[in-house]
Length: 222
Image 1 (cartoon, rainbow, N blue to C red):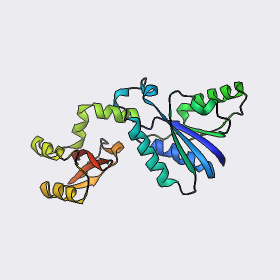
Image 2: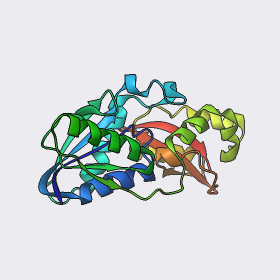
Image 3: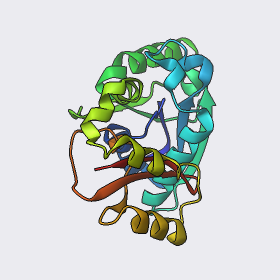
Image 4: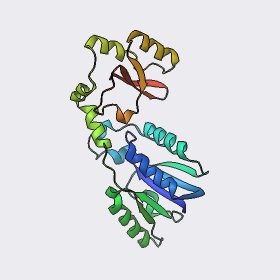
């Protein structure tokens, strides 16, 4: 266990890989210690594929904070910060002890330790998570961009779909759900994580619904 742990990423469309990274970071942080989560700022995201589709920093911060607080059962202090380069506080902060990373960022971790040594600081313990084979943030952005993705969702007629889309932006509450269920019976609303909205599966008579900050942001049949 380490008293001060660092983990960083873009955390666009928070998915299972991100959650495993955060899980491990929390796991290696000592009780009542501090976990510092760096989230890449807009300038650092500019070079990524389909950067224009990356979620705003505020939304990514909200999603990360919600998830980490939901699994924080040991009084660990959580600090979220925006980072603007891949080294960030990793090369200057003497109180950090550990860096949690993925296979893709091991090289960056090694570079951070070389720079720490140059700055007269102890190297960080590098904790690497095992890579999982699942959909990535880049793939999710591509699905958002690709209009053909809509064919995976097996929508109803265009007129029915247009009526359904009119509910986007409305507050998600019991009354709204009842209205949708009544209008499109036997179809019923089913909450869906945003990162699963375009996955290739089909649930008969279910309306996929994504909610963010209490408002409906995406809807589709099946």
